[in-house]
Length: 194
Image 1 (tube, rainbow, N blue to C red):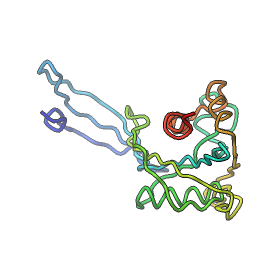
Image 2 (tube, rainbow, N blue to C red; image 1 turned 60 degrees about the vertical axis):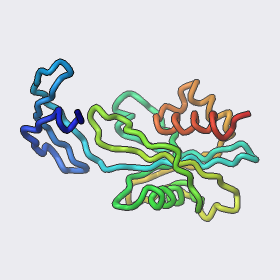
Image 3 (cartoon, rainbow, N blue to C red; image 1 turned 90 degrees about the vertical axis):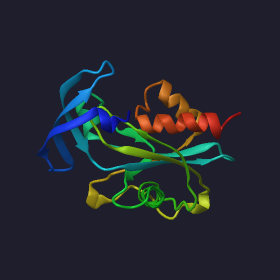
Image 4 (cartoon, rainbow, N blue to C red; image 1 turned 135 degrees about the vertical axis):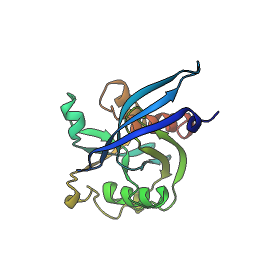
């Protein structure tokens, strides 16, 4: 039996489409014991996204970005968030979009990216699926300062960090972004293995 056989959507209402789309849904769910239960859920649809960890194996460095994130701030995080470059797909393929985001945010033009996995980051309420990439970078690939797009309100700082320092920043709490932690852990297991 598929999930589609176990759900009956009864009502979907739009609550907001101010920035992205927030809906409330009433549905019946068939439990494993054969009983149906009516449930209510809100979903926030912001589209799917992509993220990239550029790495330099010879230098043992990674490129990260640092920026203000209002939702983290209102949840008590009083600092800029250190993250991997990322963005929404905006009707592009994940590969095309992440190359553009990397250039906008880091100032590096990266031609070859490797998709390593995809994941739902907060599937209890947010519909977004994120496509995760890694890519080698070299100093000659830098074509600008990065910093993001000012007309989108971005004010991004580029960080080139030793890989081991980036890992230590997870442990000491300076890196708290989930996608960044996942890509750094992937790199520890698959790229910087020694």
